Every structure is written in structure tokens, then in C-alpha cells.
Image 1 (cartoon, rainbow, N blue to C red):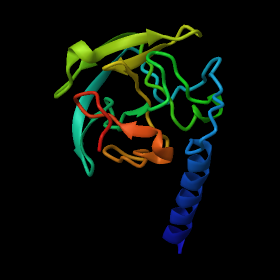
Image 2: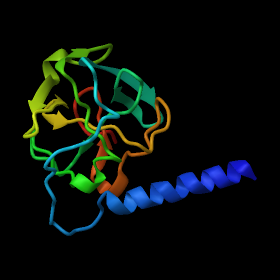
Image 3: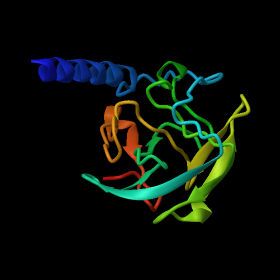
Image 4: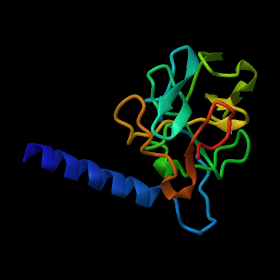
Length: 159
């Protein structure tokens, strides 16, 4: 019974996130003024590597959490509405990102944001984690709202 309650709660939370994360044709976007996203922040440089998942090889952070791109971003400028950044925290680092196994170092960069934070980019895409991925290797955010996609080692959207 307890497992059923936990699963139901997780399902409800995912449904709420889906509703807040896009899928609408409404083109109004709210630009974030600042973020309080700290769960994906790195005290130093961020290390990226690759991992094999159910959707193929994707980029992950040092903890094995899948990294995503937001299809509506314009280069190093985030188009993620400020009210959902808590669910999709950007990968933030204070030093040059480090390329781990399977990662092309030439595609890794930092993009300074208006609030002074340095967000990690790969092949020109800002990188985010997803709060709905509870453990390493999960890809629960992939294709959500048809705007969130796991990132492949080539820098493309995962299929």
C-alpha cells in the first residue's frame, strides 16, 4: 500500500511538472531574471561524461544525472520560464567544465548569465537537469512537452 501511495504521489508530481513545462503553442515566454537553482550548481568546474540509458548514449553530470536541452533556447540565452527553473535547474559551474569519458571538450563552454552565474553549454546548448530524475541514468524528462530533450555526445537531441 505504501508503494502504491509513493508511486501515485510521484505520478501526480510528474503530471504537475508536465503542465508547467510546455507543450502549448502559446509563444509567450517569460525570461528568467535570476535563478535560485542550486541543485545543479557546482562548487567548482562541472564534469560531464556519457552514460548508456534506455534511449541510448546521453550526456550526464558528475552524479550520473541526465543532461537536457530546452528546444526554445536561443544560443546562450535561456528561454525557460522562471517559474519552472526549479524543476529544470541549469548546470552551473564556477570554473571551466571538464570533459569526461565520451565528451568532446571542444563543445564544452560556459555562458555567463545576466545574474553573473556561469551556465554550462555543450555544442551551443544550455544544459539542464530534471528534478523528476530521481537517480542516475533516468531520462524521465526526455521529450516532455516536446521541448525538453536529453543531449547526445554529438550535441544533438536524443531520438
